[in-house]
Image 1 (tube, rainbow, N blue to C red):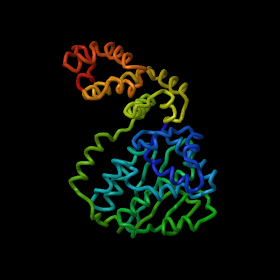
Image 2 (cartoon, rainbow, N blue to C red; image 1 turned 180 degrees about the vertical axis):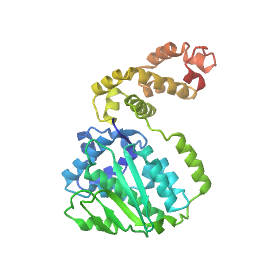
Image 3 (cartoon, one colour; image 1 turned 135 degrees about the horizontal axis):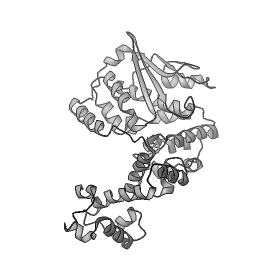
Length: 342
């Protein structure tokens, strides 16, 4: 199954790529990642595509710390709603707990295991993938981001006790010691950050308990990420339709596969791409036409119709009335439940 990550994970990529002499657009084309995701942080993309991009970028530039460079420029804002709820927790311990609980909403193949004894807390990174271990640059980016987030909660005056990385030592170990500010052990059993148990008690001055409680309820409502292939295609289609750029080819780019793979997988699930697209169009169109100031021609373009007339024919066939009749409230009793609810 294809794991997805919010495209916000690439927000710093262009700057980092240019800083090591790479053309970010050219590199993204090589791994077939859509350039549009750089401007749309909430669109899901395949984790496999991101991993290929990081490894290829490190190899092409000779920057073995490419993943760390991305982590260095990132922060809580890259994690969207997850970052917001982390920031509003009362203590660092509660922030780490919230981060480990909700991180899958940002990256559904990433997990954080938090274990504790009397003196030490260990945050172990788990990145799901086809290989026994995730590629090195993905580990660096993810664990480096965890480090930066905890550091930001302390206001920058914090260092972990140790950092463990499972892969072979890099040529420049000092770069890793400087980044993490502590001893870094390579060839370790796991990829982990170790911190003092006392660090969990540190209060976060900017925290707001009421906002934290509100955000927790909101994020719990959207906590379940799609697991089936059909649901993942549905999620990407919904995101791309909102941006006005949804085709089976574009969806395939986001899922790091071919259009034939999408058609084959969906057929095995008893559905089709056109059926998913049609359902998402139906949900979105009834929202868009509520804005009478929005030209119908613009709505047709956003929904991927060749012309306004084509959308009009589709709408009548789908809802049993014209758009004008719908706007006036003359809606057939047989209208689809989702449309009636809208």
